[in-house]
Length: 296
Image (cartoon, rainbow, N blue to C red; front, side, top):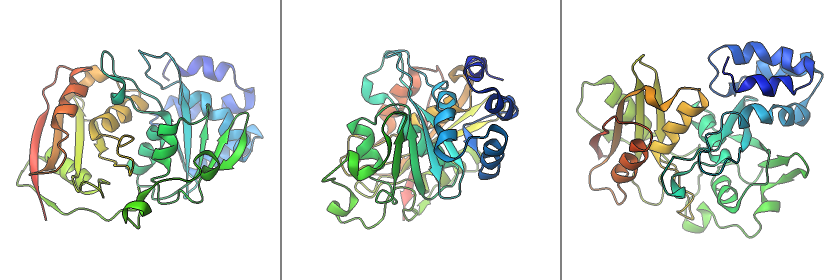
């Protein structure tokens, strides 16, 4: 078990700590299935939001915050009933726009796991404007509920009235439910093909510039990130940051990166190359390999 979870478990009610310990002792990447969630409720005596609020310190424990020292934990609840943990991440010595917010982290965790709709976000601190705008990009933003420890549960519209989103720009779908891109790239490298498949699932309705990053460790573990665009542009989440955040949630140190690949499209309006190289260089000496795919 990661040592960061030990003080968190010690501060929990004994019944919950006992039920949660086996889940944290396995390789834990911040996902609790609907069945495991139900078992936690039964064993701990906590249900619904009470359980989720009690689990927030587990999410926050994964945060990587060398600049702010401020730990944000978030849990996204999928329509499947699965729980997806998220935490904020800051890259050392880099400008703050390279940061990943806790809510972005939890949403990315759910999206990469194949979840297509979220019903709730549970957060240990009030979402900043950046995160409110990012959540507004979700296909299910109209029904999304936000729960805070001291403020109870409110709809996203409570935190973001008079919102500007995809429909204002003529997009009738949202993040996690967008149509796939069709990309072609001639390569026999399985890691490169994996990056192409991830890039095809990018959410880039405004720039039409899909991109994805796949990071591989020496042990062969892979962590992916897809480009997630936003109607307000600035809360858009680059693929490298998403991939690094996935590593962080899994408890894998950045110095374990052995290979890094970026796939983007030829002649795209937006290139992720420079930003991805800068972000990777802040935590690893590995050179980023860049491939340009053709957009069908």
